[in-house]
Amino acid sequence: MAKKLKAPWVKFYDNEKSHLEYPNFSAYKLIEYTASKHLNNYSYNYYGNRVTYHDFLKQIDEVARSLKALGVKEKDVVSICMPNTPEGVISFYAVNKIGAIASMIHPLSAENEIRDYLKVSKSTWLITIDFTFNKVNHIIDDTKVKKVITVSVAESMPKMMKSLYTASNVPKAIKSFNPLNYLNNIIIENNKNRIGWKDFIALGKSYTKEINDEFTGKEVAAILYSGGTTGTPKGVKLTNLNLNAGAMQNYERCANLNDKDKCLAIMPIFHGFGLTVCIHCVQYFGGESVLLPQFNAKTFDKIMKKYEPNLLIGVPTLFEAMTNNKGFDKMNLSYIKTVISGGDSLSPELKKKFDQWLIDHHSSSTLREGYGLTECCAASCLSPINHYKPGSIGIPYPDTYYKIVDIGTEKEVPYGTEGEIVITGPTVMDGYINNRKETKQTLRKHKDGYVWLHTGDSGYMDEDGYIFFKGRIKRMIITSGYCVYPNNIENVIDSDPNVRMSCVIGIPHPYKVTAPKAFIVLKDSAKDQEEVLASIKDRIEKNLARYSWPTAYEFRDELPKTKVGKVAYNVLIHEEEMKKNDEKYTPETGEILGQVDSIEDIQDKVEENKD
Image (cartoon, rainbow, N blue to C red; front, side):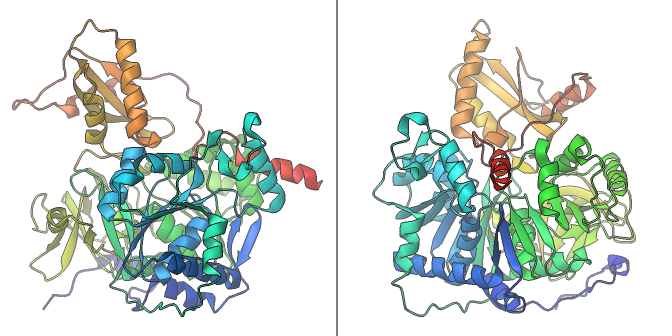
């Protein structure tokens, strides 16, 4: 029998429950149940197209019927390669409603990455944003995918905005063709197994059979991708219970949200934070998710002014950019109730700076740091509203327990002693898909009778139960909230015939906080470095997602080594830390989609036409 676990942090909850009752049904059923209480509330807002919960449920049913008509069965894996559009969110819940599994893929992933995700998940169906289809088309024959459903980012835009968006993204040379088949000057390739969104929806009109939507909490609902404990991307299996517990716990710990409150859904749905917090949690409490498939830090003031969100969730780079955006000058942000930072470490200096910035803009909220990982639905620890401790990532969620163990063991260490952070609770994953070895290494049953998630992160807990994060035990790099794995980049660089070896580390970056830098040793030092670098960059761009591309390259004659002959990457990290960079930096556009034309510019045109 498992013994009772210590929870010294409970006394610091802000009138929150320390225990919740979790339903034994699907993620869809949770939304259907809570939506019935506020059918006339708005579920989501997409560039001014606001849809009520009543209509949202109808849209889910519509897509569920189309999936069934297409032949999707219970436990089939349906990959969703979408940014934050209504179709992406609707598809996720529709897949869940019929008992299939949603595998969430970053639409800017490279061809080989998409192929690997489809293969490891054994996906048989794919729903993707149309501009990603050409990449999919090049690798689809290597997978088990039967049909690919494509949809435009403009599909659910208001009519005038949709027209302007489509026109602005069609090359002049092909305007006589169907403009909906084009985006970013790319002609969408043909494939007999591709079906457009409208034709897909039409399939479901004739499907009149009753849909079985009764599924239990223990069944796998989604697959998200994470580095695991080895730094190699793995498919994380999250159950209905995991997702529902994550939604309920997040709402409880936020402590001050109500139905009709709005959340700015910047974090993408293929990211644990985006799916669990910005979507599932908000839909659970009857709030409104403001869906943004594209984000530009330079014009973020316009977004805030337009939507006035009550809940704002982002990575530290967002909050740094906000404080430097002159568009916020004299703006009243009193509508902001909760601000949460996740996905990367938040420095005490930035928190202090942003808290003062909030005060200066008439908001009574403070920046609260959250911590978690995909393996536990992205969030499992959060700073309390009224009991902040400098440098701490906060205290665990209800029914979630943390302890610190000696690295490489299962032995708990005393308060204040640094070790590996381990977690147990209802949001801890079911395991890694098709990878028993790493599942066994990451999920371990301790002598106390509980299964603990070994995070691969180091930190310590104080006597009050506050957690202090110290760093990654492995070499993973967090850049703008995304996980990047040095060995993946090194493998691509080393594949160049001119390269003898390489090493990638994370270096400080004024906007992304951390970014990859590659150190390269050539086989022939006399080789033209510019020519080789061009070849390496070409390989990087073809094989890796954009957010993982190195921002700096350095050629060396040799790399530092350890006594046993391994590359001493810590020496390189130390060297970079010693450098002083006095160059000024202008924050770049944080694009989710990477479109040529800014959606925000098109919104401005719509407003001008209204006037």
